[in-house]
Image (tube, rainbow, N blue to C red):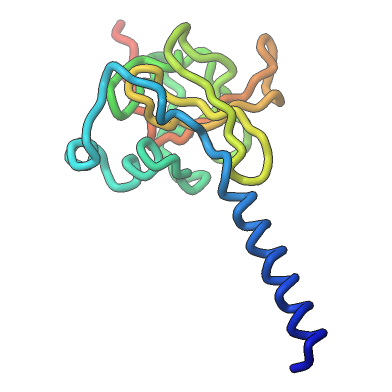
Length: 164
């Protein structure tokens, strides 16, 4: 290997490392926020499945099309799986074709929103305002009347059917 090849390899490595760092930085910043419901990781693990813990507490994403709530069409309320706060009414749910439960509006004062730049793009992250659990993201390609699509991880929710 000559000096030119070594130099080009170093430049290529720096470019890749920079791209990876750019993609990883700028995730939702909620560390300074305080929430009504707080628990240690061990306490969250005790009440959540591994998948729900990954989504709610580590800002993961479930695989599309895997949530039983995707096909939940009864009247009722969708609540945070971490603290049971009602977050979405069933009458705002719609089929977005994305593979995740989607809603065009949340319940008033139920969710918080933060800027998320974790994948090299800017998105609006949605979390439970009471426990800070990551729910999903909001996009501006939804139906009327809001034009919004809350793309929510089903594992981050529970469903409570309406009583007659």
